[in-house]
Image 1 (cartoon, rainbow, N blue to C red):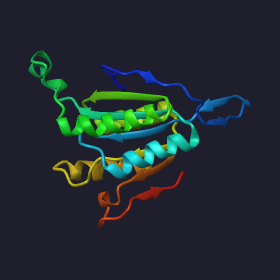
Image 2 (image 1 turned 30 degrees about the vertical axis):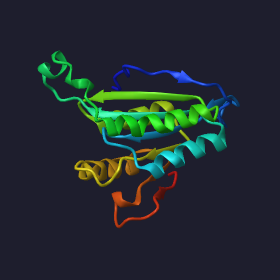
Image 3 (image 1 turned 60 degrees about the vertical axis):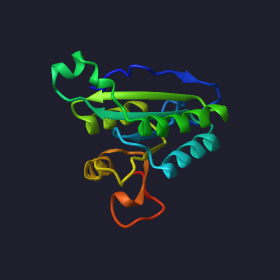
Image 4 (image 1 turned 180 degrees about the vertical axis):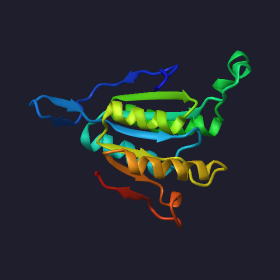
Length: 178
């Protein structure tokens, strides 16, 4: 289950991209920009904001972090620790999208199983695009590569990720909709 974010909100108002379903009623198809407790790749942030602007879609920026299963972690307030670099990398696309008139939602999801929480978030929100954008050159790069494998086999929307997550440096890779 995805735990509710501590501070989330919607900023700005602009029409979102619509996908007509079987019943003829449209449903919002946001763009999701996600990381796993590490700074965002700059290319991922730019792509997510550009796509949201082009589609006039809502942008959801999600930092999904592992909650260590220690009671003292919560009691001492360490669950709020986030590096300044990560905070800054999340703030930039949120502010840019807001300045461009795009509705933005910033989520911090804490879970014992962050990859499963991200997959549930994607399943619940039904995005047109998931931009999985953790910087590959962090000490958690291996975790991001394993998460990418799980994401690629599970989600049904288009996925973009930094090329470094599965091979030599590149501009980024697309996983088509299944």
